Length: 168
Image (cartoon, rainbow, N blue to C red; front, side, top):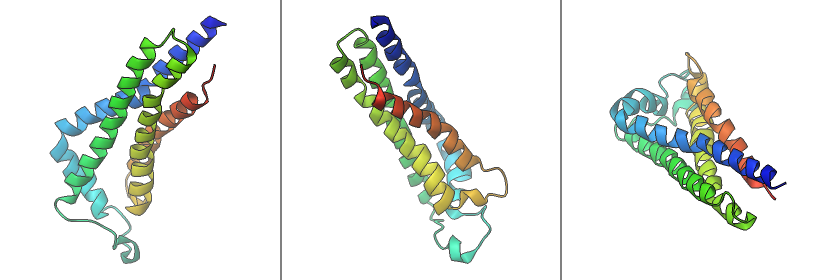
């Protein structure tokens, strides 16, 4: 039975790579291409330039020159937090791999927080706020913002569920 619990613990450590790597890679991508991302991705979304142009909806557009940079800083901070918390949890869980369950359970806390940060950034931020408040779903091109948010959110949400329901 001990090998079963060890296998489950290893599975949780591997699953923790989802919010961890996405968060850390997002940090690298956002920092290395900050101006371009702010100008070509965040600013048009906030200004609602790719919507149907309905004035009853576009009143909420934000076109202030500083808004895209502030938005991208907030996005980057949340994604980075997800990555760092995930990394911390991977290290803690690896060290507690053969420890008693309460020690391993405690090591999962940063993973749970990492997943909450990830779901906040990609689920709430990209799918809900960008998608519905700033009407990214009306994009004349692909639904990249909401679809991308869902692609990132779903595995992190599943990791969150796995970490929470894991008991020994």
